[in-house]
Length: 312
Image (tube, rainbow, N blue to C red; front, side, top):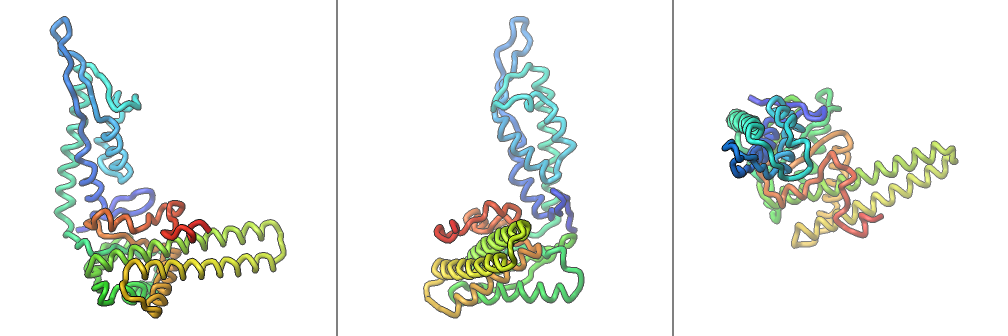
């Protein structure tokens, strides 16, 4: 069974929901310290600490559409009337707040257990690829599959990388492919290629925008053509630099033919991204591997790993 939630008009897979829950449900808690009893013998005020980490976890869960009914009661408390990380609350109110947090935590743990039981573990040496919505028929699917296969296989299937390309699972809704690459080196390589492809895609978008602005000013067509030619020359230069950089970072033996394959893969990945393809590491991948993959939804945050190229 595969479940999906909608997040910002995008479908989240069960594995993504499990990841969000597992990272944040542990922080649906609050540290509290009881104060001295009042002079009338009643319990004194309670000091709550760790409000900011609680709020962050709530924001992450809420953004994923999780535990909304349990989160709203917490957001309606005095905790959301302060920007401080701690606050003193009278005893009766503190009990109510604690119960609301405890309820959200309990239901979150139950939901995490239920969702975890519906998915199988994915090897860390894998990637997840979301097919673009533009695929409408078998011809589109054949073209997409061919380009993705070439972009992956011509670079990761080498002795130095020890990679392979195997589809190990498919999740529907928005269609996701789970692709086993066979080695951590292969995943690292693909992450670098996808990052470089995002750099190319970003620069192409910037060039297209500039040409559009020039046309809007009514400047002669030859000027637009000159801008487009200069943009193509820059893209070629950046692709060359990115491919050589990736070659130096991932291989010990220099091979001009390999550099050409890397350039081709970067171009293919860039075109796939332009059509709406999303590529992510396995949720089980270590942080140093995950950080090599760009955030598809944050184009402005993607810059070249090569300083002199990224600043052009």
